[in-house]
Image 1: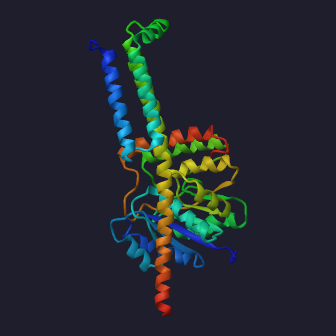
Image 2: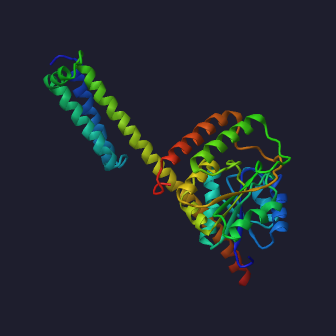
Image 3: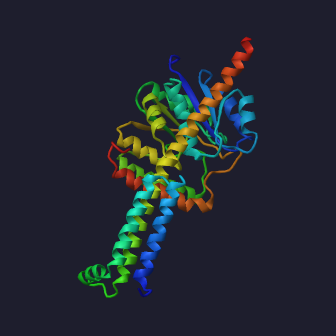
Length: 121
Length: 236
């Protein structure tokens, strides 16, 4: 097997996949988020391992340099994944704000209740 | 009118110099109202001064920004069954003398939200040229979108009724909320009204809008306006 972009992509994707699985195993990454990464690795391995398939698709799309399709797939995936990340951040941010507000209101209330309790003793 | 439960919400970030004076003036202006200071992670004596003056203080553990702090007040108002909430800055810019005037249309049920405007009548308030241009821009944009003349969309001197309290407790923009909520409320068919007030130049503290932030402010608020104008009531 000669070292070219295809074999490098396969090797990279396999290492990446192992890392992803390892992170899930150590509870450092949620299964929910790992699914997309694993799917991404599969697609990349699949495309890189069968250059014929990639070249056929490249030919259909009139892409002169077939491996650049690999970059395109990777790039599109990253952009979409980033969008979904910022969506999660938005949701988490909203939840953190709500929790902070509820907590602060409760804290003050407990303080007053405790002061009243002390007085009545 | 006395049967209505009223709370004045003061969002405060490093306002130790002015907060006591503001609270005392509110007590004089509307003795029946409760006063809530939401301390948005101040690093000075704001909390101490506010308690000394007799306000109920909620302390946020870190700075949530004006939107998050205001919403804390609305959440508190909702949970404690208030009928009317007034928002008033802690820097002395808003003169509590006008609180009665601002809540009047709410008590008479002529409006769901009342905004105190510097520009509805000729007042002594002098603003910097750039700020005036910015406000005129948003005034034009908001008035066009909601098809109702709004002269001072950035004013944070406001009063709302129970329905709006509940809505704000559920949803309130996290930063630069003033202009944004006008369109959101209009999308949900709430009635907005302006009354003329006199505003002062701040006594202490700093404006939350520094020159550097003003570009981000213009862009963010403009985007919020455009999105709001194509947002159905379901998402408002």
